[in-house]
Length: 171
Ligand SMILES: [Zn+2]
Image (cartoon, rainbow, N blue to C red; front, side, top):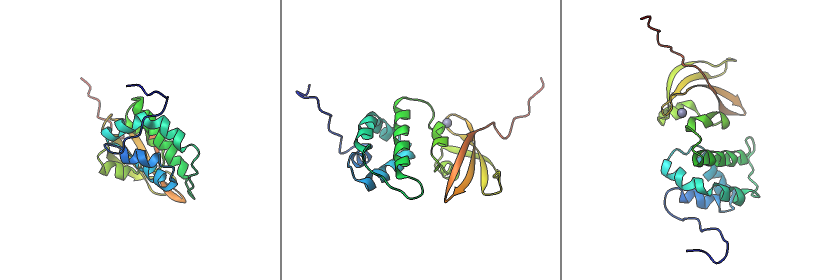
């Protein structure tokens, strides 16, 4: 069926991702902020599938909403949430590729959630915190995730080589 006028379809109010979608379209800065933080770390494929087609609409609906945030601007959470949804929509690759683009991916939590395996832990360069050699469970990419601190804890992610190389066999 075609609408007689060009208008945007109504956003679903139930089903996967609907709560987040309603929050993002609500114009309520607190609800937008909380939904953006959740989507920034969202892994559920059903929710990502449901939310991804709405990403441009969400971008328009939130473009003029003032999101505050003292140390880390709340708008950064939103911008990263939108980036994650576009990445998912475009099937741009393994979600681990987004680790370097958002500072709140704690490698310990990623490991606890089963997204990475921690292969080794050492001292971070500079003497504060730890550096974690991890492997992505989904694509086997190797990352070095380093504890950082600047007013709040954050994590720096960089692609790296495996820490433990198998001994080459000389046949
Ligand atoms: Zn990966």
